[in-house]
Amino acid sequence: MRVGDVFLGANGELSTLTNIVRIEQSGGIAVFNFEVEGNHNYFVLAKEDEFGQTCILVHNAKYKEPLVRRKQAPGDLDMNSEAEALREAMRQHGVPVENMDLYERAAKYAKNKPPTEMIDVIDANGDIIQIKHHLNGHKYRDNKTFEIAHYHGPEPDKVHICYPGGQ
Image: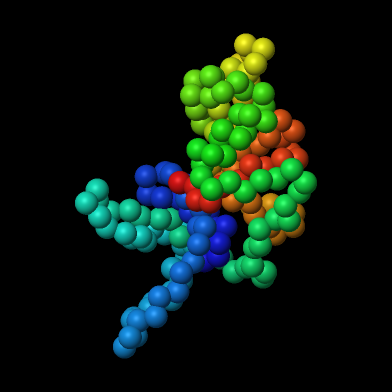
């Protein structure tokens, strides 16, 4: 697994791996590395808590090069939280402060693309505008890079307002 990998959970939700932590175990710990013959996709138990089991869909794949985060473009921002990134995206889109708590989220799905969320909000002219949100980030297949979770600024393909995490 690599930072930026996107996983499909048993409940159908996507999650993006944002961090890898190595924990040394005194005395070692058993680790199993395997492939499932004839089936490259399978679910594994990721965690079990008071809410039940959380499984993720694993895909056997061989990557020639690790993914790296894309080079930040002029105007891109890294914020500390999703809420902070959303408010900055709204500010850049000309949403008045008094309208920033008045918005709706709508999921948008497209074949062979990561899920996108559209934020509908009222701008300074009283018009409903949409702000694109990649809540799990995404990969760029053409140059083997990825971007973490982010909102788009007014120029959708130019400004990314990023934050750590994702669902």
